[in-house]
Amino acid sequence: MNDPGQWSDGAAAHHSPGPAPESAPWAVTGPDAPPPTEPRKRLHPLSPVLHGAKSLAVIIAALSWQTLSRVGLGWFVAIVVVFLIGALVLSVVAWFNTGYHVVGRELRIHEGLLWRRTRAIPLERLQAVEVVRPLLAQLTGLAELRLEVVGGGKTEAPLAYLTVSDAAVLRERLLALAGRRPPQAAAAAGDPTAPAAPAPGRLLHGVANRDLVISQLLTPQALLLPFGLAFVVAQFVYEATWSFIAVASTLTAMAGVLLQPARRVLVDWNFRLACDDTGLRVRQGLVETRSQTIPLNRVQGVRATWPLLWRPRRWLRLRLEVAGYGMPDPQENPADRLLPVGDLPTAELVLAEVLPGVRLAALPLTAPPRRARWLHPLAQPTLGAALAEQVFAVRHGLLTRHVVALPYARIQSVRVVQGPLQRRLGLASVHADAAGGLTAVAGDRDVTEARALAVELTARSRAARATT
Image 1 (cartoon, helix red, strand yellow):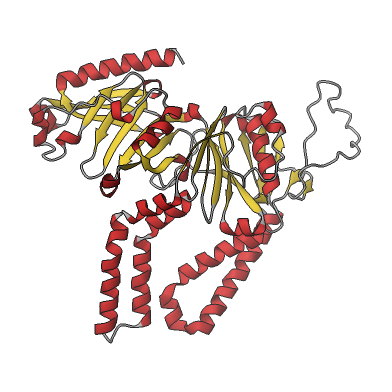
Image 2 (cartoon, rainbow, N blue to C red; image 1 turned 90 degrees about the horizontal axis):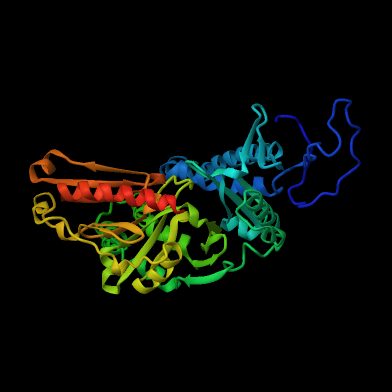
């Protein structure tokens, strides 16, 4: 795999074949000969500049306010420039020695100068290909491809950066080779505006940006912000010993507290959900736009969440549990968004596309016996479990309410767990496990009910898998 091969500029999407080289005496010819290997392509020439710009933010953050106060502004700028030049040089070297091409049903990525490495990604394991456009990529007309494969713990082999048209063509080609697209979809992949257009297919719902902003203002972090600002102003007015560095450090810490709600607004901005024959099509993002397809056959379950501060507005959010998606931070993974914020009718409209026939308001959830109050004095009435027609559903949470719906066909194992206090009270919990780490727990049921529930779940899971 480490042969030098041929290189071509990533900006060219098609290449006319040149004269065929003279075949070696032992080469296979005729109809049984393997298809010719396409030349390797490089990433876009502006890729090192964008990687260097990303490194600039990391360098400044690493040096921190303390370094600025010690060495002064002039030396601080000089240090940043030196590190930036080094980062740019490394980015250019990496770009010059990085290439990719499709060989048969594999995407091969070659990289490295001293230690050369070739990664071969079998396309039959490919689940989805995201087209991601960070802010700098949007300004330069570029895009990044991120691949999700079965069993991957993180995004596999991101290609950063390509032109928007090349990214769209390569995305549709890979999905077609992986069997995730019909042939006619691959033929229409040359539209250069595809990643920038609204999500294709039948539009299900679009989240109003106003509702998105209000939902993130109704979070503990945002509500505590005025008290934090008042504390900083009071200290700055009444404590003459406070320096600029101290105030800047305090404001930086407060900005870190607000990072989560601000990130959710930026990630979910202009959220659009559509549906077509290949699955759910999602487009979202402000400073970093994402266009992705979620295959419905990889959905393991759905989680509905009612935060405490959202309840007066009757809002909730829906998350998908998808097998095969890399999730470095499950709480902030944008690939699992189904509905960032919305009311119950909207949630049930969207949920009907993923789990047909399932209605959140109609789930027959029953609470555990009253003696479970010894273990959950306040939360016992909020616990619940239900064997619905299509899903096993559980409810938990006192301040933030959660409902998890797990289709019977996705259940991989069922277990009954009983702790020492549960044994004394005659209680047990039933755990239903699915791929991707999703577990639905019916907590603190009567021990006889728990065993009967486990037997029924096993039977329904076996029957559902036999019919799918």
